[in-house]
Figure 1 (cartoon, each protein chain N blue to C red):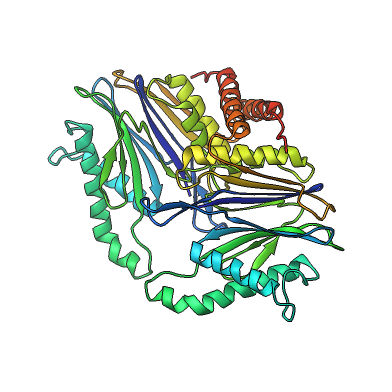
Figure 2 (spheres, rainbow over the protein chains, first blue to last red):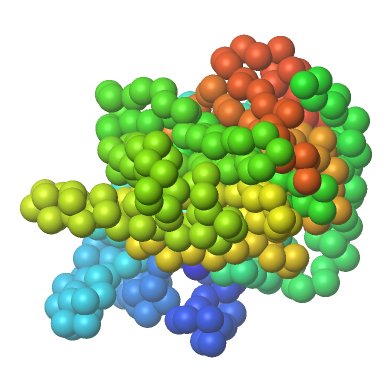
Length: 241
Length: 241
């Protein structure tokens, strides 16, 4: 499984992804699910992958190859992030066209989905959720975040903290707590965690961190959260029967 | 959807269920998913239902009808809670035998599952999870609780609080916080919530509460939890990039 989240704030964007992939419990591996395309002063594009690794890797490879070829539309020439979403969608459909019938022969279907966000110069930051069929939706004021994969364990903390006016720092913290809650309750999501905070209009990635197993900050955060919530819990009034 | 949980502690058992049922978002209704069979000084049996309402209601009705007939095995004559689980399983399979092919004609399958717990005189308290196929598992020291339905949102708080030595009162509180988190993040789980705490060897239900929308205690609990966790969150150290 996977856990990815992208958040749109007034002051920028936050992205995070876990690294666990598995084909059964006896075939567990670690792959980075975050891809960053950056050209300073021009654009920052972040792609978070969920689903079958063969599918998501192929889509990212196709996008990278097209970036090398100036004769066809690519992520460097796209004028808007909407156009980037279209390009990701096109790459997904190309891969599905190639692999789909072969997967179907084993009763598997093409299964890749993405969270896409960033900023192209001339536009405000934008955030998209691209479904496995290649259609997509864009985050709005009312719904400032998208999750994929094992989304439910970590949703309550996000719902309690995140609004559009939350600071980048607080959003980053809530995302890490959300990952801590998810990993405590579900084995299919695992470290390392990749985190990017993008500051609106900076047009470069200034804040990027990878949290490996045993990371000091992440461990402290998890410990303080567990102890703090346990204290809050112990102070809750007893039920009067 | 549904959210039900049953917890086995050293000092007894805790059961809780929501009441929301729906066949699509425009057909939402409220049904109690908790059935208590009690004969003071002899046995307490609690059944929490998940799945298709027609199926779960039919199973409970069959069990109740059989209880009226002293000539066949029933919940009052069962010598152990394991035998009760067998009877629930048999009733499920009887209903599936009757309805299964008719549901299959509409590409639906029989879908009912249960959390069953309680105590029959002469035995310690026991807790079972009965799958839709009628097979079942029993809670152990390592895994002291079972959830059904929308289980994930509310699992982190349970995982952080519950061990076998947790008190009945704290377990009841953690269950209510777990429901609060679930209902904040998912519309398909809804009030009222039915809660039973069973004290080991009491052989009667002394603590039972229904929490309706706007319940004072439940609202206070949710408010204090939200405020308290927000404070804990605000005290967490900022990430040093």
